[in-house]
Amino acid sequence: MKNFVQPGRTISFAPAAAVSAGGVTKIGSRIGVAVSNVAANTPGTFAVEEVFRLPKLATDAIAAGDSVRWDHLQGLVTLATTGAGNVALASAGYAFSAAAAGDGFVDVKINA
Image (cartoon, rainbow, N blue to C red; front, side, top):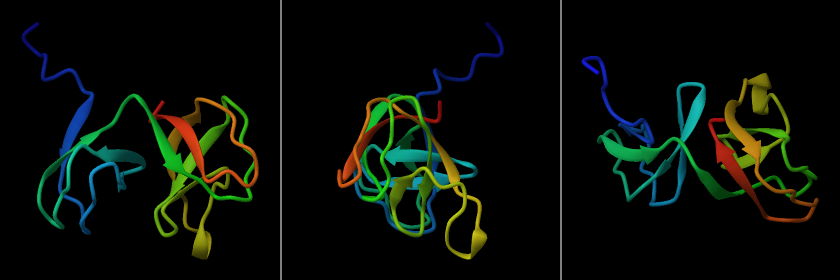
């Protein structure tokens, strides 16, 4: 195909703050997971597909298939739609498995 660009599993993005490998950053209204350490304001590679184990809000009980969002101020996955100051949260995707209240992590199919 003449118009093919790339498979689309990763994106090059320059975050405002440094992101460690495996860390999450907001990219527009979605999220990306750093493939390696990325310095602030420097382009790095972020995964935008697949399933990742991400930290979650401990009080949320999340069922498999629930839509989840990324609260970039807390650095957590949540069921909430808005964060501090009534700011809309980035869509993170959906829970790939259930996570009980008290669990610190949830598996998320990102950007799905």
